Amino acid sequence: MKAYFMFTASGPLVALTNMDAITHPRALEKLAAKGITKFVANEIPVELAQARYGHHFDIVSQDLHETDDLRILDYNGQRAFTNFHFSELGKPIYYESEKIAAAAS
Image 1 (cartoon, rainbow, N blue to C red):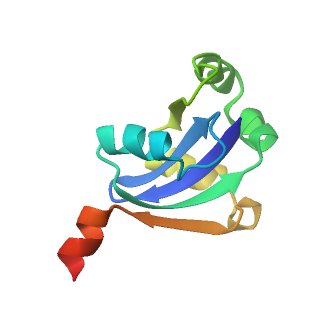
Image 2: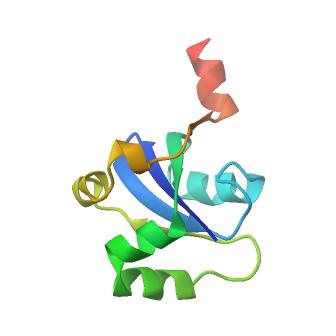
């Protein structure tokens, strides 16, 4: 399982996935279904997310299926933003859908 802090157009959020990367095609498909087609994501240690969210983390992570699944742990941007220090975030991963990139050209 991996945890990601994400900056999106609607604000920060925290996602959990059992895929090997947030840019896995199935993860991108699931994010697009939620209206998220452009983001900056930083991996965070799963143990840190578990410590910060406690029982809520346990409930959300139990919903992860064994294959290609993604769950949003925190939609509350203010809480997500204050739950993690920048020093706790991994290297940024930048993503924008091809449609957004083409529109900007």
